[in-house]
Image (cartoon, rainbow, N blue to C red; front, side, top):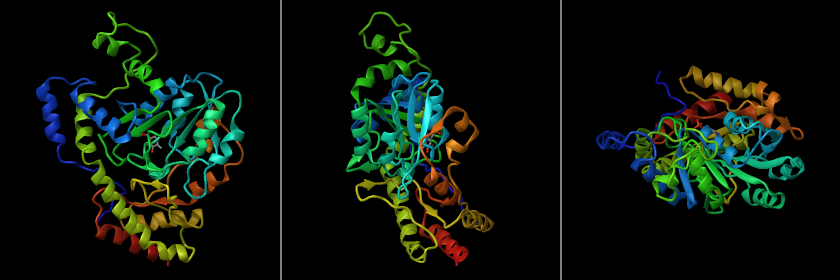
Length: 377
Ligand SMILES: *Cc1c(COP(=O)(O)O)cnc(C)c1O
């Protein structure tokens, strides 16, 4: 039995060459030539004011929480259907995640529920572009402007996805990307903070450099290198940046390959949807996604769990996704909910993600299509 894994991290080709260049340069720590090239790539591709490489999306979210000036008692509105890092960043500042429900169609935060969740303590909205499909940013930015809130995009899954033609990471004030091996491009562990609102750029460099004015010092703008703000070691080494550059150079190709597999699945499951046996992803016409994920919604949790088990018995690795944060022990301790989160609970119980990776061939997608059809026959 050949095993079909859920994910295979992509290899771009130039990783070793660039690592060799780093070794030859004898510049190993962060913020060197490869970091600059990656940051220039992101700044140009996403048309943002600036971009900073980080050691993960988790650390980019933590930087965003510092930049948003979150403190004890402050509240941040976010979905419960997300990865723990979205909420941890807020909790680490002593602030409270306020979970609202998601939309039935995209599994993204339901923008119509946000306004009612705002209190005098609300400081920010952290949105998540689930499966690389962008949230309804126009409505969210309108609410944020009216209430003076900062908008942070958790764009971990959304590199090069667009909303009305504009790239994720440029749609709010700050954007957070992941280059973990489960994402579309990878440096093993890695991430980036993109800064769309230039008001945040200067302070972001300080936080990134452990709270020092090292950048201004190196550029000759100040004559002393000193501690001026809080910060941490958020920057990756040049080794990470070298691998990331090789991957960024191939990002469009990887996304195109993922989208090809995504569309084969989508066409192949049309009949099952018509028979009411699955629901396929719904992508609004104004959102172009990056093929990050293909998922199905099964009629019940029992059928979902059975499907996962039967596929696994055939060596096909399909997986469920988030346990809603509001129902997790830490979510109950640190967060609160606004309204019922019934769509979140229901989605979490019925969603299954199928194997998808760059370079996935027709044989592999056909194998999954055949097995899912057999299981649900
Ligand atoms: C993967 C992911 C993260 C975490 O990314 P890391 O780079 O592993 O820290 C955060 N949020 C979402 C939505 C993710 O999918």
